[in-house]
Length: 365
Image 1 (tube, rainbow, N blue to C red):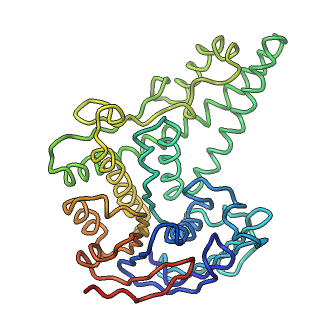
Image 2: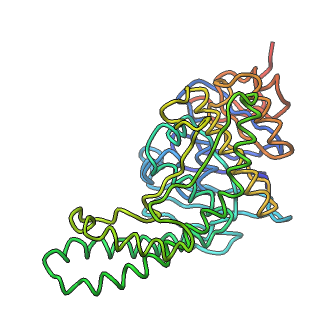
Image 3: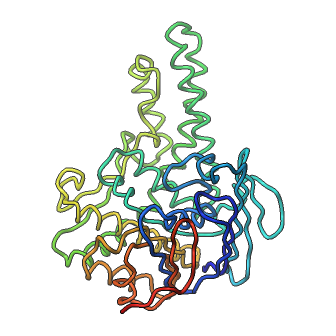
């Protein structure tokens, strides 16, 4: 899978642009706050349909503009394709000229893996970010998983509403039974899919971490749930019944896949508490590279790698691991100084300054 062309109007601080890219490494360089990350964000919108930095849609539109539009031309599944995204009062998408449609039409069409400094929160912070990473990765290989998540959260909302009312209306207990059955059914499917995905991701990430660290310590990844495991639907339903009293007191559901976690251990110890900054960065990079590997293994498509301000923080071993592992795939790298990246690999170079993107201007002295 490769990006051939990207056009943008009214997006972030970027001046309207029309760019063609190389099939290998594309280096975006310039001072901070000039728009490098915004270009990666524009590409990612066709994968995740939202900012990887958590920005609201209104923040994606250039100041004093009412809307933004992006057009992506890419090669996938052996043919040329085109996707368009319009951001204004909501978002709409067109795929190969068909639409406008909800942005969900883009699910699984353009596959990319992004790493940004903020992704260190996968190790440093709570389980919500790790669940989001897992679910987002799964959605790329099994697009219908997004609908399953939607149904689960719809049932979760209903149960949470009932939990607030049942303390005062005991006749609602029968209704609670019904929603718990639906919730455990959808939740069981989610947990089963997560486990199937982790069976591929975990050993790949562990091997990549060993390569980057010189096998100095071992990475172990495990799924953690209050439910007891297979069959997941039965164990979740039992866990919901056991926690019902506490859930009524709390007013929300305390067990289920929306509360599960991904445990990241180094030599058996929590990486969040015992891992150094460098070790934590290597863990996240391992997870991201493994995500790309799993995606390629399932879909047959090499995803596009988006690396935001990553290379400058890595030693030569880790830099080599990333670029070598990318192989023949397409990579977009942002940096302030392109010289170290240029020395590592040949590629197309773009200067980003004041929202303007200009190709091929860097010459190393």
